[in-house]
Image 1 (cartoon, rainbow, N blue to C red):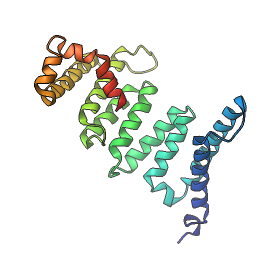
Image 2 (tube, one colour; image 1 turned 90 degrees about the vertical axis):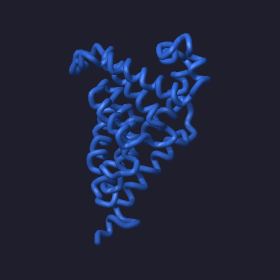
Image 3 (cartoon, rainbow, N blue to C red; image 1 turned 60 degrees about the vertical axis):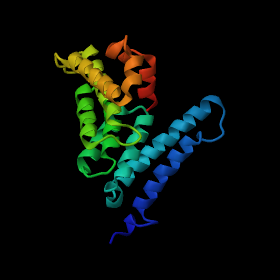
Length: 216
C-alpha cells in the first residue's frame, strides 16, 4: 500500500494538476488580451507537461496508457514532436494489449511523419493495419495513409535522414491503386461509371477523394 498512489496522494495530485492545466489551455487560458493570452495559453501547456512528468513517476499513472497518451498530446501541442514521438513509442511498446493500440499507432505515425521519420511512420501505420482500423476509420483509410507516407518518403530530399527505398514511389502508386480497386468493388456499377474515363489515376488525383480521406 502506497498512500501517494491513492486519491489525495502525490501521484493523484500531479495527474489532476496536469489535467487541470490542459483544461485551462483548452478553454483559452483565461480572459487576457492579445499577446498576453497567447503567452498564458502556452504557460498552461508547460505546467501540464511538468505535471505529467511528475505524475508518471507513480506506478498507478505509469501503468495507465491514457496518462502516457495525454502526456504525448501536451508535448505535441507545445510543438515538441520528438518528445511526443518518444512517449508514444514507449506507450506502444509497454502496452501491446492496449485496446486503443491502433489509434495510438496512427497518432504516432502522424507525429513521426511531421518529423520526416518516414520509415518509423510506415512501421506504425502497418501495425495499425494489422491490428485493424479503429472506427470511424476503415482499412481503406489506413491503406490510403500508408500510400501517402510512401509517396512523401519517396519525394523527401532531407539529407539528414536515411534515403527512401528505391521502390517507395512504386509502393505508393500500388497502394493508391489498391484503394481504388477496393472502392470500385464496394461502389459497384455507379462507382465504375463515375470513374470510367479517369480510372484509378483520376480517382487518386480528385479533390473529392482527398477530401473524403482528409475528413476521416
